[in-house]
Image 1 (cartoon, protein in one colour):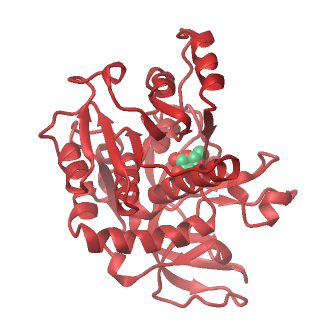
Image 2 (cartoon, protein in one colour):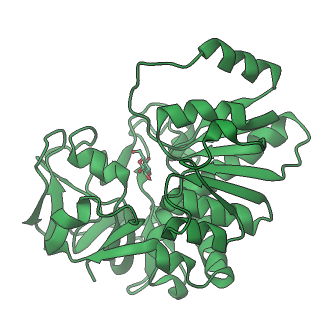
Image 3 (cartoon, protein in one colour):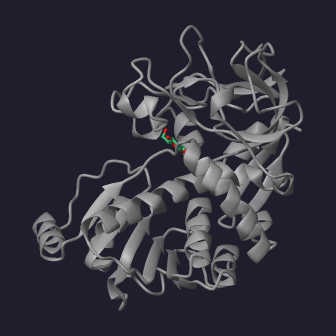
Amino acid sequence: MKAITVIPRKTNSLKLQDVEVPSPNSHEVLLKVQRIGICGTDRDIISGFYGEAPEGSSYLILGHESLCRVSETGRFVRGLKKGDLVVPTVRRNCPENCLNCRNGESDMCVTGHYKEHGIKGLHGFASDFAMSDASFVVRISESLSEIGVLLEPLTIVEKGISQTFKIQQGRLKWKPEKMLVLGAGPVGLLATAVLRMRGFEVHTVATRERDSLKARLVEETGATYINSKETPLSSLEHKYDAVFEITGSPSVALEAQALIRVNGVACFLGIYRQQQQLEDAGAIFTDLVLGNKVHFGSVNANKSYFVSGAKDLVLIQKKWPSLLKRMITRQKEPEDFEAAYSPESEEEIKTVINFE
Ligand code: BGC
């Protein structure tokens, strides 16, 4: 079968190669991959910044965002059958099976020895067929057969929002009204849609023009789009109950602080490359203390967020029927992998590769 692979930590090692179709053990499922989505993490792995091959393998099959159909089930697998439309989660428990991993929260693994499909120690889904432990596979509605590949990025949002509320409601009486989303890539747009669906006033900031596709999608949800080139963050008049930082830019992340209201919270969802230069750290920490503010980071998502995300995808699709489809701006064949993984235009939102 065809598989898109890299040799982790080696630049320019991306290729399409022929590998054997895996065969599932009694607790696994063989998945017929329909499509995979591409994100910044894939590009970081390709550039040699990130990634780890499975033990005993010289290469790593890429792809952690996927939409699949069950092709074969192991002997002890229950609740899944051939043909089911499914999305496998990304992370698997650490070998020590730490407190959180054994509680179904491998996204909160304490040992750091977890594995991630297509990223760290396990092959991903960028191949004709792929495997997963059946207990990490979530069945989704047939109505999501076109856009279900957006579920994995949506789970990052589901977890970020859920943790924001748990943290805030655990420490004060919190009645948030205004939310700020920094970034209008796939995760930023999905965060905008979920927060709008829950009735909040949402402002979403990005660098694209006001007539760009990203801006139009933001406004379709009833959120306000802010072009940071026209309106720098430092000039924003509003303060927000919660800020979701998704640009991955350290300087934007630093600015997030000043945009939170007293008692507010900032949730960081990007991966930030190191940057030596620091703004005035004293002012940032003083404002944090005097405003009772919280900063927290959130990575990955466990199965519960895939389950809630699958419901939200259906709801988003009902409320704004073309929104999710228009987020998929490029579709490529596996043979065209090089073009697929190189960012295209400024209008690119989500590129997918069809293996169907
Ligand atoms: C994935 C997460 C993963 C993280 C770090 C992200 O792109 O969506 O599932 O935990 O990368 O590896």
